[in-house]
Image (cartoon, rainbow, N blue to C red; front, top):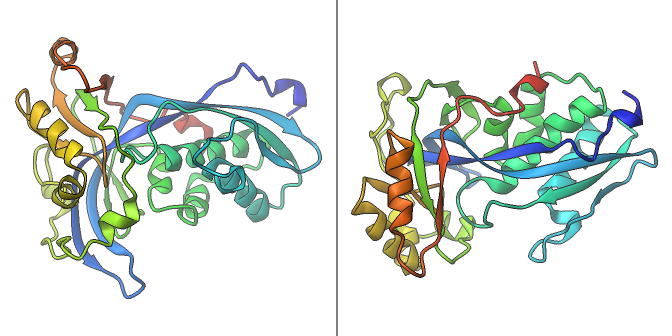
Length: 284
């Protein structure tokens, strides 16, 4: 692929996810928690652009104030892909951040996955999807599902994935004004860690809860407040370790109507559920 084909105008989306349920079913000896969850991809996304470098450097041109550039998952993903593939090429990266930090929507993990998918394509590495998932797992437990690129029932630490078919749905997502540190929620002594496992084949929409929700609500009251408001309109729950909360609706009009009634001080948006990641076709 010639450098002329690296078009700054080409945008690679990094979509958000929702956890339709999240159970903590155990804990490994190394401290990692064993989970069961269903990941639902939605059409709200960060956006990433790339330009080639021949000096092997990886540069993030839009660093976030809260994250050192070298620690950003986009940079770490690109450098790990270089190491694992032996690629000597580099890239400049521009990240248009639309997903909140500490929101439980997988924004950083999705950014990393999009970097792996896009640079595997642009660098012409030809790595298979399964190999990219393995690389992604070294960056974080949520990265593999975005490379997998389909809605999935997940087990283990989140890396054991089975594709699931989900009905069309529109979601109202609210953003409490807090960034939740995932480690603090998983490290809470009051967190339940022995929810009985369920069989993937027996799960259906509406089954299960988020075991992290009670801990997050107790420590961040604004999450509880946002959940209480949204629950007046439909069954609502928190995504991931928080802070964002969501509710699903069969029709876009229903979701839009709820959004129109947001009270002052609460921000949110609507998004459609996706069947596949927009970049699913970039890996085999």
